[in-house]
Amino acid sequence: MSAAPETDGAERSASNPLALAPSDFFERYFAFFRPGHQEGVVPSRIKELARLKVAALNDCDT
Image (cartoon, rainbow, N blue to C red):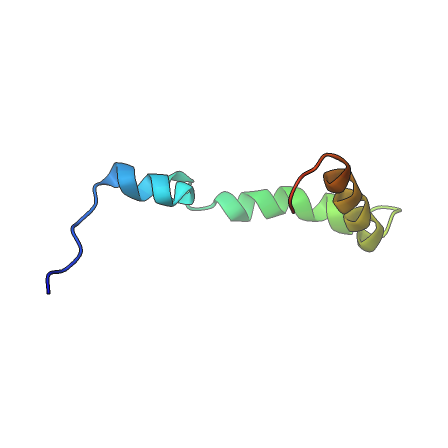
């Protein structure tokens, strides 16, 4: 039985698009996202329900 053939970088990035993202991508994203989601007058729970409703109205899968 032979091993699976090696894939080149183009195939790996096509199957895993985050392979091309900077290493601190999620760290920077959540530094942006958390304050708006967890702080403010409206509770996070209500913000999340609003996000889900907007997604449903626009036929988005979340």
